[in-house]
Image (cartoon, rainbow, N blue to C red):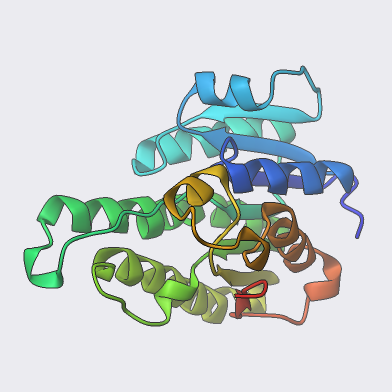
Length: 234
């Protein structure tokens, strides 16, 4: 799957999954726009200078900041061919009836709001160019609620619904919109939080990145509005 001269924008690019996704696209020849919350975290994740890479700091929970990052990317590379909405996060909560408004808002803003802000900024350019690829990160938890996970599950369910709605709206204009639903991703944080679990049964960031690579490739041109489980052995 070649991405020579393709421009791929990746949010949450300094995180474990974001770095794996960036590495996969870089190996396939893509030019990268790597977006995360601060210059410091981006510089720590990508210390080498690379002309095929643009590092941009933005708060993607703020629509103006997201749009500003996209405008800088367009000024630099002139187009965005693929958008990978990797930014997001997890917070375990209390019971539903004890869930504070702040936690509910954080999960919705962090998981669904960042997707909404980015597609509002990116899609007009894709429409003008005649096509593009968008891949969102949902979660298996978005398919079913669990105890003390209502805010997170609802926010990831919203990502799936956004994906389906965007696909219905954009597929006739040459834009493929899909999402992946990973189970537990093998990260240092998850290993620390679940020391008794077997990480060999989880999904590696590198394996999940390959699914995103496929969904952004021409080989996936017939896939629209899919929510693809990526469960490893779990």
